[in-house]
Length: 404
Ligand SMILES: *Cc1c(COP(=O)(O)O)cnc(C)c1O
Picture 1 (tube, protein in one colour):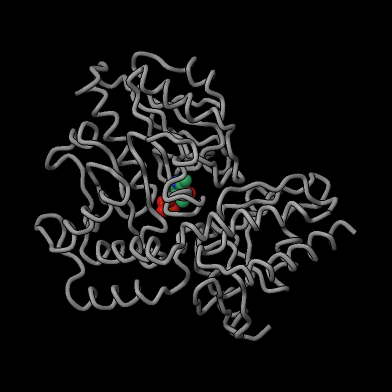
Picture 2: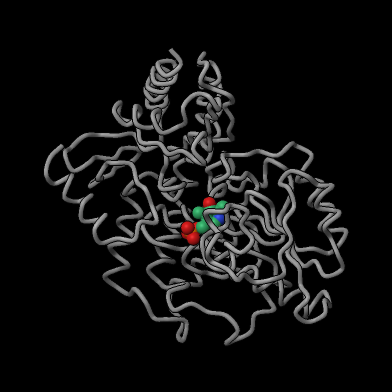
């Protein structure tokens, strides 16, 4: 360990809020699927900044766009028009088939914005009595860290000590359409759900769940809000994970990979009925829809499609999954995934994910656990078959080594 490495970590510990517990690696460079630490050691990134870097680190075309736009115009606020926003709207509406777009910055802001819009829609369009709107959410959800959102989290770490929370949220088990139906009242305005629960450990519901959810929402005139901030933009092997279930959300939330990791940009995508309720002065963001973000997002979406990253996610994700399932190890409880959104859940007695993540790091793979016992594997979507094969060798030796 060089002094530099130790100094960086010591300064972070001394000066920063301790709201993260990072792996002891200090990164200074990235290209494609690869990262380098301050000592020049190379790693395969199996986290992709929680799927914000689907396009690979420092994608040259996104970088070029960022440099060009940064030298021309970065921020005007929405008090004035800028010449990038309309182009962003056109591109994202065409790509996703949405009618209206609300640009924000972080994923949590997109969630909050959608919750505001569906409540207002409930009062103005559905006719719910004022201040009675209910939004149904799922247990083990992850939708971000703002006060409104953590109020309906079921994770004690996320919520304890942060109350009092906003009322109007009802929690039902994920994957249970009967429970959803029971929770519906005349005041229900929306059902907010992840197509695949990411932070909960890559939990994929049964094939009949989302078709049932879609039917229930249509029948009871409830806005189906799919949080695709992690699952969307190719991560699960389709542009949007909803395509796996052959359904369409009323409101779709995207973020993370919308910029390929260059810039925080998120968006609420919907029809005119829901987003149409927001009138001038009723919602906003200083940075939302800024020209730098819009230009970056356009190129980030373009390379995702043009360079076949979504197809690569489907194909190599399927291969990766099948090969991981072939690893014979007593430490593994289950391997699951869709596209390049993969997870290895360990047996409770296997000693937790931490030693495995540590061993992987020594072998040049950066991965992260969720909830202590599940290792998520989500490399950038530009990964090649050779790189997957190399990663598999590392996973196999570490997972079989632990079991031995
Ligand atoms: C990451 C994430 C968010 C929050 O995004 P931030 O940009 O961190 O605010 C919301 N929903 C899901 C499903 C996510 O994975």
